[in-house]
Image: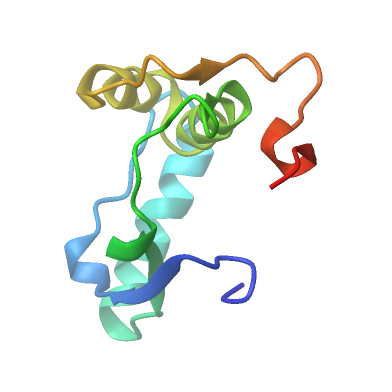
Amino acid sequence: FDARERGYERRALLSKHLDFATTGEEPEQDATLQTLHEQWKVLPPKFWMYVPLVSSQRFATEDFPLCQTYVDTVLQGCLAWGGVKLAQEWISTTFDWSPYYLNDAPLSRRPWLHRQR
């Protein structure tokens, strides 16, 4: 994954710093998470997150807009792991949305990849 995540730094997380979202909508899945959480107290797994490098952090611009497909990807993860509640929390706590936005969903493309440099 590291090669794919160019511009990001992989950082280790301790399981004690994680809170696993349960939706209450799928008791079987919630029970599985609870069981795993108890097992991890005995044999903690390794968790990683990718954090943007300071040198890679930039605001969206006209040439490099915020793409709808990226927002969709994040929301799909929220819905898969925390349900509607997590998706709503992500939307309501994300701020400084850029005016440079591209609804690329109909074509799922990144136009700057095809522009002359």
